[in-house]
Image 1 (cartoon, one colour):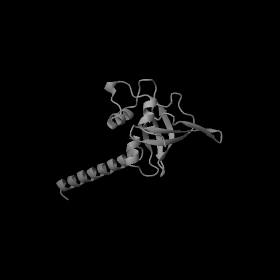
Image 2 (tube, helix red, strand yellow):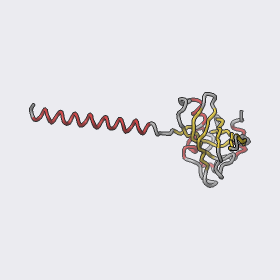
Image 3 (cartoon, helix red, strand yellow):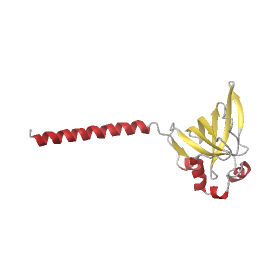
Image 4 (tube, helix red, strand yellow):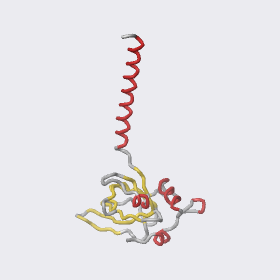
Length: 164
């Protein structure tokens, strides 16, 4: 083999190895990605069964209900973006700052009945904070614009989307 041909095969082999490595890295990352969706996005474009997503929005007023199942606290509430609401079931203790009319992000899966089962619930940390994804979803739905002041209170959200 000529020296140029040998060098060409080494370069092509290196490029192929590099491409395979990139594909393996990207496939490993894709299995760990958790996408954010607002309730209206999730209803209009449902995810595959078992796909973990982050559901963000405001907790609908008068939708929070507590119960106990085998000595474990269970909460049921609805999350809305002003256009649609999704029922969320969470087993465990909710964060101290969790309350109706406030922004929340729930991490979990959606079942075939459009009930979101959360494995983790994240609440805001002060009265002015709203997660970027939730603010963007509310802005996109046209229900809130930060230049006009703070987000609407819980009573206003109750009129935007009626609980099921």
